[in-house]
Image 1: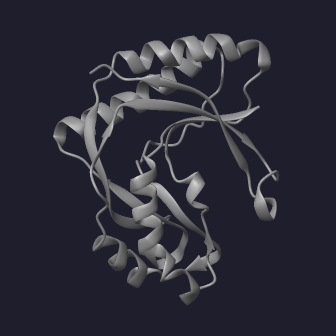
Image 2: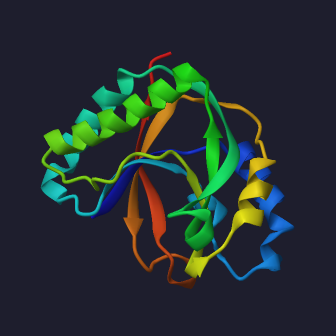
Length: 188
């Protein structure tokens, strides 16, 4: 089973970002991410065996409980691999130093929990972002990044980690369908 641990913004924050993007989506033929899939991936696990799921859930719960809730907002933007040849357009997170530290530790804890449960984790460096669009071929997106740089969502308290299952091709237009497996509260 494909799974990932993530921070999922609350509905009002998602709706705010959606409204900002909605009036702009028709300007280009990007593959815009469905709003129900807006999240910040902490750890991606391409293959979670059923027999390891209980251990993974237990370890993720313990890792989350060691972290403290913090304030965040969706703000700014960027592109992967870069603005000149973008394949992914993303919105960033506004974090103070404490929030940045907690989020990095949440990602490290989620990855460590998966590894200890015997579940391989994607080894890419953690770069907190919300994917808003995918591009079929490399595109120069400087104007879009500037547009996102002017955006800021309402603030919210990041107070839990969500473990999601991802079912490829089962969503609308053959996109993945995500399903919440478990939510883990952070320490207050």
